Amino acid sequence: MSLEKLNEHIQQELQKREVSEDMANLQKEVYELVVIREAKINSLQEALAAVKFVGIESPILEEELNALRQQLKKDKAYLTEKVESLINNTFKEDFIKITKKTKFLQKELITHATFNKINEHTIHTPYVLNLLKESTNEELLRLSPYKIAELIQTETKYSQIRKFVELYKLETKESKIDKWITTFAKNNDANEHQQIRLHFTEVKGMLQLGFSTTEMLQDIAVQWSKRLGYSGDVKNDADTQGAVKEVVNILKEEAAIVI
Image (cartoon, rainbow, N blue to C red; front, top):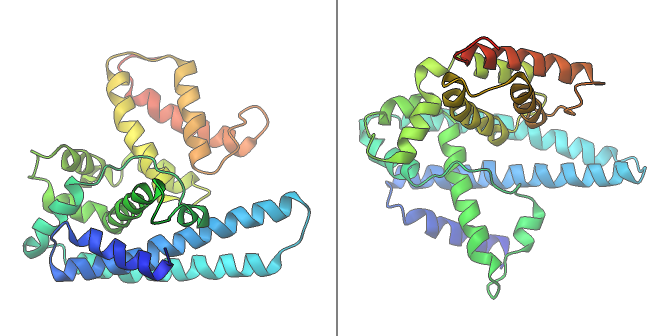
């Protein structure tokens, strides 16, 4: 399946949500400007890692990677303005339809290899098409999550909306875990950052019931640091040590007992 034909198919799939024309056009732009561009960035990062492993210099790849990152930043700023222009009661139902079907689960990294799995005659195609569709909607919601959450927060009958609102209610915008992510992140991987927030909301309940040890908190903190781009080596890596120490203190503050 050609990329052009794939794009047409994704648009048809997105339309099954029966959103307004304005929202459908926005989905199309998010897919083309964010999902596809991030797939190119991920692919170049893999290529750079490969050539560095074999000891080859690759300045052209690095230049192209930096150019893609800069363009992605500009496109996200542009799309954020477009999203926020739709955050009102007129388009509320659109945001509800998108959010209630979005799982926010950890997915495979989308790269050139993802598209290579697509073939009209293989079992991989439906999975990949769904992956691209879900990624498009997640990227759209992440452009202005706090404002979207505020708009749809009353729709508590849908479990996915409850989860989304819990993650992005306004009082969490300046939460300690968000500040930790912002301060210590070595990457711009919104999906990894979101997985930390999701896990943090789950861990909080456990901590508040008193089910925790220092070792357990340390293990959690190390895994989160890896999601931010650190080595996870708390014995030899000073940067990892600093990030882990900070978030362990945050976790201890959530605990019901002094550890």
